Length: 205
Image 1 (cartoon, helix red, strand yellow):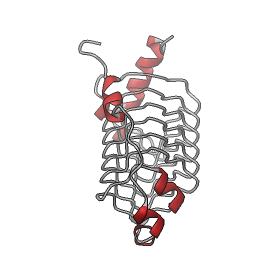
Image 2 (tube, one colour):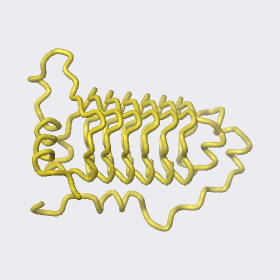
Image 3 (cartoon, rainbow, N blue to C red):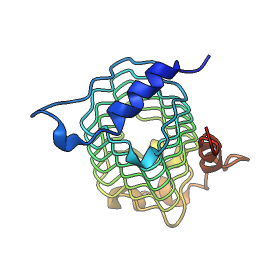
Image 4 (cartoon, one colour):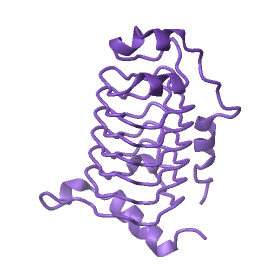
């Protein structure tokens, strides 16, 4: 069962509003909302920076290029969500479920990802500079060309992920023998980035 039409309409109005008209210190509040697979006509217009999104269910959504910087997405369900190119700088994703999510070239600078589940997520080209990945699950995550400079991340996490010669690691990890000698993790037989594309609204929907 999909999201009711009235709920979807209200979400689109809220998420694509002009924040210049917001009252001072206003923060959109969608805590624990159940919005799996919700669609927006222009995903890149979605603007939920600094929003209260704790525990929200946005699994399977297609919101490429969305503005989510500073948003509180702690314990959110973003499984298989397509967030390609999204701005999540400084966002709180503590404990978030991001399994199989498409975070291709997403901005995750200084994001809080401690305890997040990023297994088999596509983080190709993502900017994780200064992000906190303490205890995050990275098994099978694609970190090709990702920037983890200054990120809080452990050796065991890095070697469980799919890293390449283009992955930018903190110096202490890049020189660690376990990392240097670790074989690349086997890639999934399908592209997580492609899965994200399949969630795009069809023409005329």
